[in-house]
Length: 497
Ligand code: NAD
Image 1: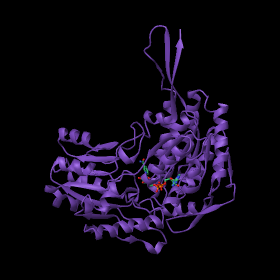
Image 2: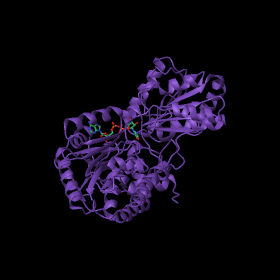
Image 3: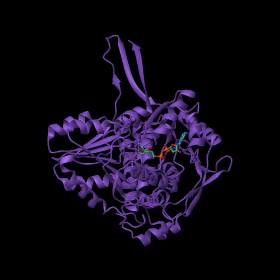
C-alpha cells in the first residue's frame, strides 16, 4: 500500500531519472538520425525529457530484431507454461515499480497520481498477469472428421506485432496489447503516443529483467506520421493493433491495403450514451455515476459517458443532482493524492476542449456549470468539468468525441426514443442504462449498438470480459481470451490416417 503525500511525490519527481531513448533488441538506443522531441509535463509546463524521435530507419531496425527473435523460437516456441512464468514475473516487476511508473504517468500526461497508481499501474500489471496465467490453459481443437482423417485446428503466434497506442491510459493501453501479444509468443514493437512515451520506454527494461528475451519487445517513441506510419506500411509487420482515434484508425486500414495486408485491429473513439430512466433504482447514485463518467481521467476516456440521456419526467429533479455531484470533481495538482481531476494532456487538447465548449454555446446549449480553463497560474493545462443541458443529438458537442470533461444532457420521452438517440452516432463503444425494470434493462441493452453495456452502473469490467467497439469504434476485442484472436492465426491441419 503506497501512502505518500504531495510533498513526497514532488520530491520523488525531482529525483526521478527519466529514460527517453528507444528500446531496440534489448538495449536503449538513440534514434538512428539522432532526432529528439521535447516531452513537456502538462502539470506545470516543465520539460521532462528529450525523447528519441524514431522514424523509418528505427522501424526497420526494430522489425529486423523482432523478426529474428520470432524466427529463432527463443520466445515463440517456449512452452506456454514457461512463457506464463515470465509474464507473471513481468507483472510483479510492474507492481514492484508502481511508484515510479505512476509518477512517470502523472508527470507525462497529467492524470491524478491516485489514479495512476490504483487504475493505470494496477490494471497494467493485471493485464500482463491475466494473459500469462491463461496461456497454459487454452486448448486447440480436433475437428469432427470421418474415421480415416485427423483434423487439427490450432492457433499459432502470428509473428511480428506492431502496437500503436494513445496517451490517455498510456501504460494500460500498452499492456492490454502486450499481455496477449507476448503470452501467445509474438515479438512486439510498441509505439507509444508522442504525448506520453515515458512508461512504455521504462517497462521495456522491466520486460527484459523479467526474462523476456532481447528483441521480443521493442519500444519506438515518436510521431504517428513518422514512425507510426513506417510501422503501418512495413512489409514485414504481420499484425497492427491500435488504440486511438477513429480518424487515424481509418488511415491505418488504408496503409494495410497499400502494403502487405497486415491484419489491422482497431480500438477507436466513442460518444457513449448513459441512459437514465425515471425508474432508476437510485437517482442519487445514478447522478454521482454520471458525474464520474465524464470527469474521471479529465474526460479523456474512450468510454466517457459524454451523452447523458435523461427521461423528461425526472429531468428537473435529476440534472441538479448531477450538477451537485460534479462539484466534487475539481481540477487540482495531480501529484496531490486527494486530486481527482488532473491536467489535460497538453495545450493542443485544452484548445480542442475549449473550442467544443464554444461550439456548445454557439449551437444554443445551456451551460450549467464549468466551461472555463482552470489553474492557469500553475503553467499547467486544466479545465473545469462542464455540463451543458438542452443539447440536441445533432449538435457538435453531442456528435463528436471531445475527449475532455464536457457532458451533454439530452432529454427523451420513451424507451424507443432513448434507443434511437443512443444509437444515432457513428460510434458504438459503450452505453449504460439505469432502470429497476429488468425486462426494460435487457430489452434496451440488447437494442444498444455498443461493445459494452452497463446496467445500473457506469464503466464496469475487468480482464475477464472482452472490450471493444461496434461501428466506427473499431473491430476485435482487447481483454479476455477473445483478445488472443488478434495475435494468432488459425490453422487447419488434415492428416490422412
Ligand atoms: P490518435 O489516433 O491521435 O493517436 C493514437 C496513436 O496513433 C498515437 O501513438 C499516434 O502517434 C499514432 N498515430 C497518429 N497518426 C498516425 C499515423 N498516420 N500512422 C500511424 N500512427 C499514427 O489518438 P490519441 O489522441 O492518442 O488518443 C485518443 C483517442 O484514443 C480517442 O479517440 C479515444 O477514444 C481513443 N481510445 C480508444 C480506446 C478503446 O479501447 N476503444 C481506448 C483509449 C483511447
